[in-house]
Length: 525
Ligand code: KIV
Ligand code: ZN
Image (tube, rainbow, N blue to C red):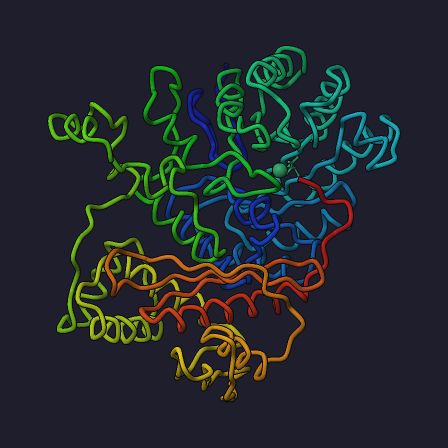
């Protein structure tokens, strides 16, 4: 493999893989994972701190909100190359170009389907017309930036000769990265190795560009397929935090990066990810989207480093390497630590936030978070790191939302009908409601409905504990559905009912954002 000279990265070492994060695009476009602009900005800052090389910030033509979030990320987030997705239509490319214009380093990512199935039924285009669109779209994108990525959607189900012709056309038109996605998660590792080796040997100019892999996880093979593509010459990995994405998701960033780090003998590649920030990034995403990862999720699940059986515990005590192939600290897990109590001051709190991976929150947000910490310390015997993470994320994420929680009183018991007195702030105006219900949660949700009438149906309500003990904070998830649109909200508090109403309000705020959004017809995967 020869050294590649890339417009945004300069001379790229042969063994270096570029980490392309698409949490805010492929991840965000999957059901229930939508984020508002502030949430995206916060995630984008955190991804930049994690060290991703390229950040796909969204799909600008999808809606005014998508455009604005890509534009704001391009304007404010420093470090990664910022890219926006575009179909081959000129309007898409012009919109993506406008959205990423302000970035220090920018890219346009354009795609079209190349498989027989997609061309015939989805695009209703003849192969020659698709080929012409490849050339035209890349040529247009190159007028706005030297860094252009072209993707062959459903690439792994594309006929070999046609795939090579399309890749050649894209390179000739000026694409600097060529991505061959396994759009429907159909490939097995052998397919990936064969396809990437074929493109490298058959397509003129393939040694001068970066080949990229983008795998979906429908058969649970996304990480294995990604590693197979890299072993056959791919040098860009497209992935998402917690593996979120269309259907079964995308390649999980944390898994592929830790596979490379843990097995240099089998995967001798380098990358720029600061692995100790992985857990923080994963947790923030879970808070923002309302989806926790499953307990046994590799790297970031709460059982990923837990040892329950006596034999394992015995081995661990003698030598941790007996059952641990990487250290929990290397991905950001810390020993559960007791933190400050109610006498701790603001400086100590600010310091704690830094060690937990928060950048500068700004004076206002710090003050609000500190106040909530003090309230928590008054109510809870022991305040753990996880408690602080839960409350800070809970508070800060809600900073700019239309509906805000103010106060709640609830009366419940086995004899009288539960009653809730709720105060919310809607668009800056305080409003209250007094409601009865079949249970305390029902009474509170009825009160929310009285203050903010809506048609959304409650589809899921779940409660978990942030830490251990009867005084642990509760973390609630509420899923709402309106006209087929699903949103999940989260809330945390030592009072379960307050956590529930915070989660409900979070979900409603997300629904308001989602109402303004229209999905583009032909976007897939
Ligand atoms: O899965 C896919 O094919 C995609 C492309 C748009 C890159 O997400
Ligand atoms: Zn995809």
